[in-house]
Image 1: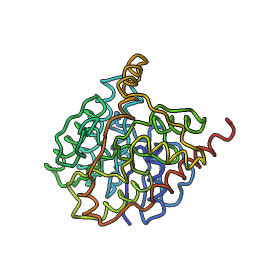
Image 2 (image 1 turned 60 degrees about the horizontal axis):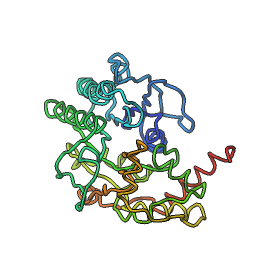
Image 3 (image 1 turned 180 degrees about the horizontal axis):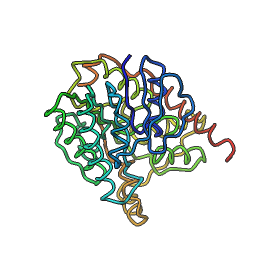
Image 4 (image 1 turned 90 degrees about the vertical axis):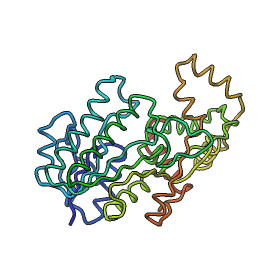
Length: 318
């Protein structure tokens, strides 16, 4: 029975991954800052206090020398405008964790990074693992520094690593831009996205969990960086798929992109506009060839599951 320390266990991906691993033959240490109990987690699981800025809590969490660390904890780009804290938690905290994990005899460290270490847009060619690094904001830079610190630590020690760079992860419990899109479509809001014939990559949270679990046992994937996704869609087609899951027509109309960009800039929403309008597409053939698998859950099913969660969670608010 392999033992796993899962950091960020109370987060969106963390809760899904904890429940997924609970169904398998693992002994879980579920690390989060508040160490609160989570629904659906029982059996071979133990909740442990974990704070990336607190060396003592990291050392305590690793005192039983788990076989694997899966590192999800960190500050998201939309959760803090404190530049120093983003680096302190995401970069320095990960380096601290990697050092203590290596000294504790951890065999494998899986780090969930972000596709944005390659940049915010992929222009005419999908990103691959060999695309130039072009982290453009503090969040992406902090994740890149964390990757580099982890790889340096593993190169100098016995611990092995796997780095995953996913695009937008969605599913029940999703927040931020995807959640806002669900809300707008649910309210039948007309959206000026009919001309958004771009390419953006997405991955369903449960499919990401399947991939992470499989990587634990795939020796040929050790000490590698992988881009990971399920599918590519234009923003316009994503809205249409979500509307279909709601059982509603997609209310789309066309406004030239340059006009929308000006309006978004005046409203201080440039980042939100760019995340809907530009290409951010990846080529995951390296990982697909290694694992020899397609997504466990197909797109229409995963979007329908996300919409059903949204409906159920907003019953009392409607």
